[in-house]
Image 1 (cartoon, each protein chain N blue to C red):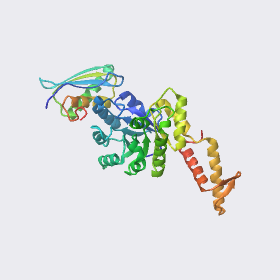
Image 2: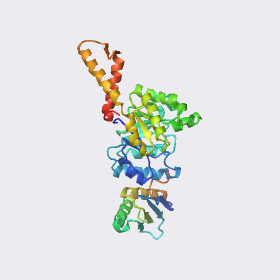
Image 3: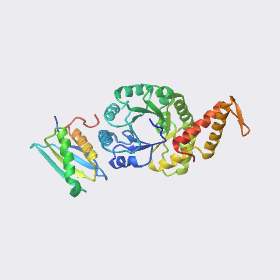
Image 4: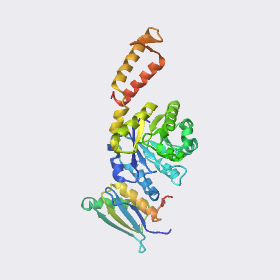
Length: 94
Length: 281
């Protein structure tokens, strides 16, 4: 499967911008920047990790720029970014 | 589907608005995957709405999703995705009897209902048959913006160009026994224009209206309530009719006017609206 950069979401309030990069070296690298990082940084990481596990994605760089998104929105944006990256079914506007 | 007065559009790709949707007082919210979403964001909106429907609480509002039309590359996938959620109804754009049948087939093994958005000359012309194309169809929704575009005529605030089509859809709703949803009023800074537009729909038989602004919710609910004097008169007519019926009289006089079956039926209709909307204006 060809893996490319996939991006979804926005920097609007209550949203999150997630970018998925190919990881040539293998493994997961999750980078989180959030306006509520102190309070919810760990929770955001859990949502990201659970969603990656559900979709069997084990090799990718995930960059998360959060503007206070709820868990459902983080999951939705990650699934869309993964789809656009070609890592899960549900690619762009299929 | 419960009786609805207000159906408020909410853009499907905006988390903040989705999260607020259940708190705005509308009888129903329409999570929009169609016109409110850019072409290159259709996949994102579908994911976001699907997750929102699984995790957000929309309170007492009936939840409806406007999918993309079945004449687009997105419509069928939208319906398949929404079928897995707690949505109560799908609003199908550019509805025709054939499109309703296609949607119905995609919704097999669900209890989802359909609202048919009539916004083309063909759709309006076939309104009754669209309503009857599936038992899932619970309402027809007249969409004036696309309708006037299809007709190639300008859309005006006064709405003379939509009078016939608007009336025709309301008539079809009554004939088919489904709810009638009027077209939105798109100028959120013209409260008087909104009032006139609601009343124009109401006299044609529309019992509900689509809205694009939460500011229109409460004014709409007020405007759709029957007038207290109408309600009081309806009570007098129905009470007198019951007395006449008990005495074996078919036609009688009340306050100098002949009262017969159509007038009694209209009075009963006003009382049912008053009960539905919680009293008089």
